[in-house]
Image (cartoon, rainbow, N blue to C red; front, side):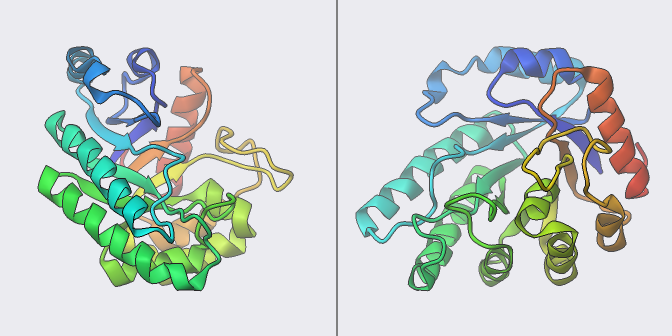
Length: 250
């Protein structure tokens, strides 16, 4: 069980916050030239902290559209990024579960095919693909739809607790984990408020993490604290709170 941090696309943030954590989740920005990422600097920071690496694929890139040529290009693009991720030793790659129109039921078989193809590219690169719930966003698939498609395609899930809460409250968290908790390999943890605040330190919002513990106590996957601050004591406090709640050895 590893507990780490999301660090955006900033190597500087990784360097200044990663000590004491087990992993860093580095984002690949949309349009980023991966050849310009300072891989030596990345490796040095991870080695110095004895930390592993996960990556987050571009946030704005949808997985499926109604246009087959665009879908082929999406798979080719993400395959190239996954190959790079494997070359730098990334263990997992997070993919937002998005579609051009997430409420178009006719597009869901296409999404499944896209997810399979991207998953194959990840496996070829030696990286585990995990699809993340973003149903509170305009292009995000609803929680249950994402769970069904992840199960259908045998794709692991990155369960973002705050996103699920923003979509459907603690009840949504409870329902998803009761049905699809066995698919969850990676967690994004932070707090949120129903008025719209999110990515807060755990304890600063309204999420009942005991609901998560009901389904994931003793969780053996990976956890990334996704709190938008560089305040290390706050980050460490959120990590402690989630490990205590899930009964994980910190």
